[in-house]
Amino acid sequence: MQQYDIPQPPRPPRPKTPSQTQSRPVFTVILLLCGFISGAVGGGITGYVASSANRPTAEAQNTETTRTVVEESETTTVVEDTKSSVVSIIISKELQKQRASNPFAGNPFFDDFFGQQQQQQEDDGTGETETVEICSGTGFVISEDGMILTNRHVICEENAEYTVVFDDGTTYDAKVLARDQLTDLAILKIEATGLKPLELADSDEVEQGQTVIAIGNTLGQYSNTVTKGIVSGLSRDIGGNYTGLIQTDAAINEGNSGGPLLNLSGEVIGINTAVDRSGEGIGFAIPVNEAKVAIDSVKEYGRIVRPALGIRYIPIDAALAEANNLPYTYGAYIRSDLQKQFGVISGSAADKAGLQEGDIILEIDGVKIDEENTLPEIIKQYVIGDVITVKVYHDGEEGDVTITLEELPQAENTNQ
Image (cartoon, rainbow, N blue to C red; front, side, top):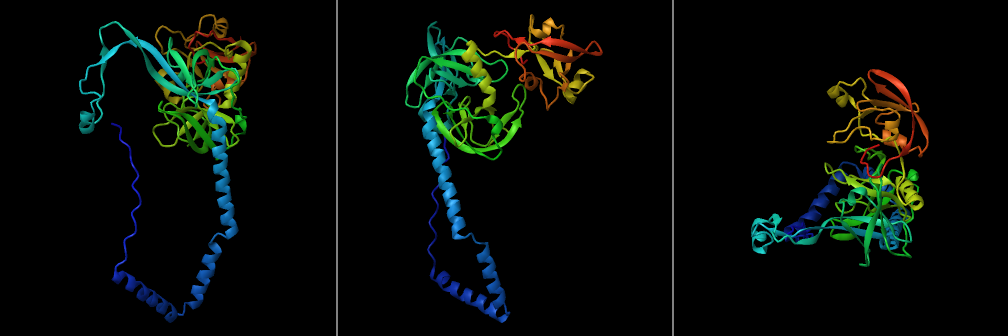
């Protein structure tokens, strides 16, 4: 049984007793007498004038009220205009039929007294299969003919079934068009026409403090849940390829991933992606300008085409340098920490240029690779076919290597 905190109604004020009713005038008279005896009449007048001066004027109060009403009106208008373009994404997979090994799991009597029991599952031994919902997320319409943008981590399973559910309950089967190798983005496709795509803003124009609205399939249960907040910060990095993110205090929960972060004009400024659970109200969204490249690529090529070096690497900081006895506290250390996967992808641009496992990439076209200029951020500025000069530390020496950027094979899992 789920437990919810139910706010208690405010208590009514206690009735005054006769003694309380009588004592107040006496107390007031005493104060007034003390004021006259101390000769503070002028001070009292001055205090009244000062306090009156500090009170907001009727005009200021009206302005504040008008501002609040206008913002609320803008919010409800945005929600009404956009909710039909925000979808829930349900991911299902065919699995062996299971049975509960805990006989008390799901029993309301035991749940009430001992808390909700964890239901342990095991193969039921029949060999039969069933389609089971394994995860869920959010997406939104980006084309009239049924393209849906979401997070790559929402597309969480291979050989799974993807279902898109609109706000009015309309359901479509979806197929995966593309997963972005560089950002946490993916694009689905449904067989539909006449849909209303959301407008995409220029996320470079986003300002700290501006009001934003998030819509998503919260916890996989509450579709098109609306939350509101502000842009708390810009250009946040939270590790890996998650760089340059928009930080917001609009509530983002499990299931919201892939949903839109909107401005008060109803335009998408970001794609809700992550939450820092060590605090409260710390959510992150991928700036929508990052998605525009992927969207245009899919529309032109049918897939997401990005330039890549074709390496797996670890960003170097002081701790990594000390632990691995590296001569630099910056750069990209070509190394794979995954079994049976090499730091340099066979046949990639880096492989053709002669880069090897253990090399350190220090600069690209004179730009030093560090926390301010990460390797993914630098590569994003180029297109396939561009020739770049890479400063590399190899076998104890620095040297420049010329590399022609190429498309990374879609099957490869790499961070650059």
